[in-house]
Image 1: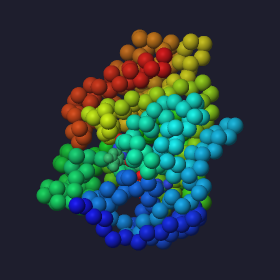
Image 2: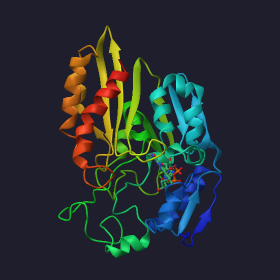
Image 3: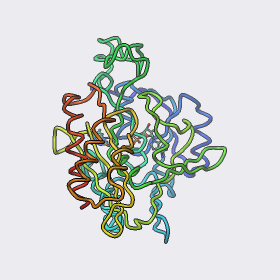
Length: 324
Ligand SMILES: Cc1cc2nc3c(=O)[nH]c(=O)nc-3n(C[C@H](O)[C@H](O)[C@H](O)COP(=O)(O)OP(=O)(O)OC[C@H]3O[C@@H](n4cnc5c(N)ncnc54)[C@H](O)[C@@H]3O)c2cc1C
């Protein structure tokens, strides 16, 4: 049986208190929301914080606010709550669907949207217990100095695998971050860095407090996920797609891949292939073709990486057909 290491647990009641404790804890600290990613990682000694700051007792982080211009989802809102909210289902069905694809109902009753955005990157050589990793002398991401996926690589290639992220970027969502210095808001797209270890641009002490979405304003979005087990599995390739059409032609398109790099990947050439054209087979085929080039999965998750690359075209085309 894998046991949690010893740690000190705090349960602050306010955001201000939480960020203060986190800033004081320095590199030894970590926030925890649902704990469905952090605690298994701690049991495997992938993450070993000495101070853990629970977020579930801070009421404002669990709230969802539906304003006239924006929807603000508290970072600690449970996945099941967001997935089943009738206004989310009506205005952002692609997001509701992506969240429904995350793990299993019991885990979605525990896991939060914020925790999903900040999910650790994944790799076959990393997502193993301590003894397994020790037997291969660990890897670059934790305790070792070689990336077993590409031993010549100086950079960790662990992969971005959170289901909500590609569709949130496609929908131009924004993230609110709070630290002892104050509050700032950035595009969710700018939260990520293509580095399997330092995969977030946010500072460690910054608390993600909310995820904001603008009104749909004619945009429609969808999400497609490749995985081995239909019941539950992390994505090994995913597509978040959003399109706006006016007068029968595409006036806006945002396409994002997950599961192929350490950060979500915007497919700008594929987006360009759609703009100004009707969303019909010819434009869809051009976009799917343009998506394949930048999709360069590595051999670090389930399925062959060449097949995952090949599947990019099919999944982008399938997502766009759903938006026709
Ligand atoms: C069996 C299993 C299957 C899974 N399948 C999937 C899947 O198919 N798709 C998928 O996307 N995920 C999957 N997950 C991962 C996980 O359940 C989800 O990603 C979930 O949304 C994580 O949310 P959480 O609240 O539990 O995160 P936590 O574990 O609490 O936190 C995750 C990380 O985010 C940080 N954090 C959390 N909230 C904040 C905040 N507000 N501000 C700053 N930092 C914060 C934590 O410090 C930690 O580093 C699976 C997990 C398990 C155990």
